[in-house]
Amino acid sequence: MNSAQLWDRYRKYLCRVEGLGLTLDVSRMRFDEAFLKRMAAPLARAFDAMRALENGALANPDERRMVGHYWLRAPELAPNREIADVIVDARHAVHRFAADVHAGTVKPQAGGRFEHMLVVGIGGSALGPQFVVDALATTNDPLATYFFDNTDPDGMERVLARLKDRLITTLTIVTSKSGGTQETRNGMLTAAKAYQDVGLDFSRHAVAITAEGSELDRTALNNGWIARFPMWNWVGGRTSELSAVGLLPAALQGFDIDAMLTGARDMDVVTRARDVKQNPAAMLALMWYHAGDGKGLKDMVVLPYKDRLILFSRYLQQLVMESLGKERDLAGHIVHQGIAVYGNKGSTDQHAYVQQLREGIPNFFVTFIQVLHDQEGASLEVEKDVNVGDFLLGSLLGTRDALFENARESITITVDEVNEKTIGALIALYERAVGLYASMVGINAYHQPGVEAGKRAASGVIAVQRAILTALQAGPTEARTATDLARAAGTTDRVETVHKVLEHLAANGRVQRFPGAEPTAARYSRKGVI
Image (tube, rainbow, N blue to C red; front, side, top):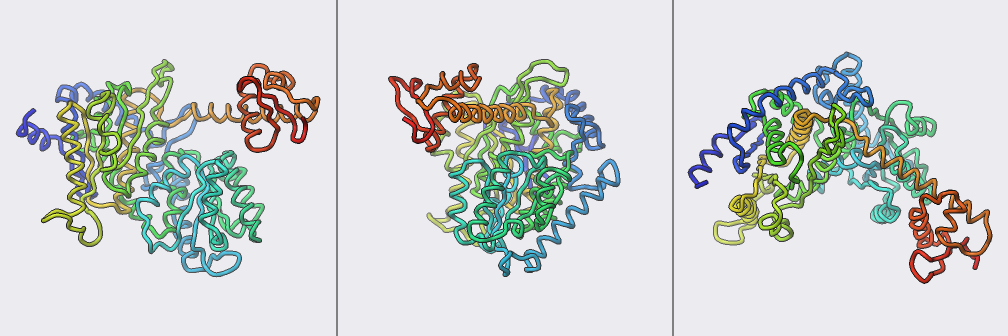
């Protein structure tokens, strides 16, 4: 394909959403008009399914619930007045609470103002807020934000070390829809202990975002936490950024959450259009289908050429992979669908793994994300008529060309600048693309049975650990192997798990370990017993 043909193709397929300052370029994807015609019927069915979802259909039949994240930015579209009212009420509550915190009306136990914020959550309760905070934060924000987003004790200790003596002015937000998510509960208990250790009452620094009546909701109510905000069963974690889950941290940090919601709402309007070439979400979904033959055969590499968007690929990992990674289709057939997502940032990627992208296994397609506006003020000129930002653009376009020359496909999304409206638009764009793609390949994008299976398996490991410790305490004093302890604990079908648990306990000084002739022959006993 020569340069004139590429230019013609670029002009033909370029999609510009003028009011949002966003452009989608799919000209470097090697599809043809026959593909678009062939996909017209599946896409029409996907549009019908999306319309039914937005009208309140039980889009998640496994859990018998509606899927309503689109209503968060357009409450008037909710299927009943009750849902519309709770959305509006929650938004007003977020605004009021943020204003009261900024004004010092809601204040820390010791007085003064809250200056820091600790967000405790996992998955969608953390990835969205982390992405938004990293994208929009400035040195002038009224609160600085920290996260507990895992159950790693060392990770939480590192965060607390950065907070140091700032807990006295730190507001903690605990987010869990069910209120029983163990990782989040562990983070909450760790935070509460940290406050207690410095003589502070955690409840006077704590806010809950959870479902009404959940374990967390009861904890917050019974202990007199500062405030509680709702989560609803018709909003999934990975699509919750524009609920209180994401809006509250964003508002507290001083971001314009109304602009975020406007960007998402305006993108929703554009992406309902059935004119494919004017609908960036439909075109994205079609390109994903084209790249992986509708079977997810190629990975999605997301390369934002902007430091502020580096966490976008992590955010998309959950949105895309949790939504599309399914064993069975809607008819119950085994299909093993999904699109793997990974990414870095430009031009770091050029010095990290573009070598493989250009010359290695062609098992991917790339999404470049370009931001036109470099920074506030002029960029440093490092050569005559060339500034730092020019080199960033050169890297993006050069990498794109180098990949295309070697038959590697790419999509380019361009936004005018990174601001609240842009972030809302990007979130909505990918939410819609995921929904349309899922319908085209016949899967349910709104449940996550694999996640639930992992949670059950983790609970099983904890049960094994309890049984081992009971066997150690109740049994003979001499040291025993993992096989011996598995037998004593009644877990002979899980000897490998028993060994790994014992190794972890020994490494943390909770049992005593005696090396054997080989690693699996090590013996273990209660502390202080030989």
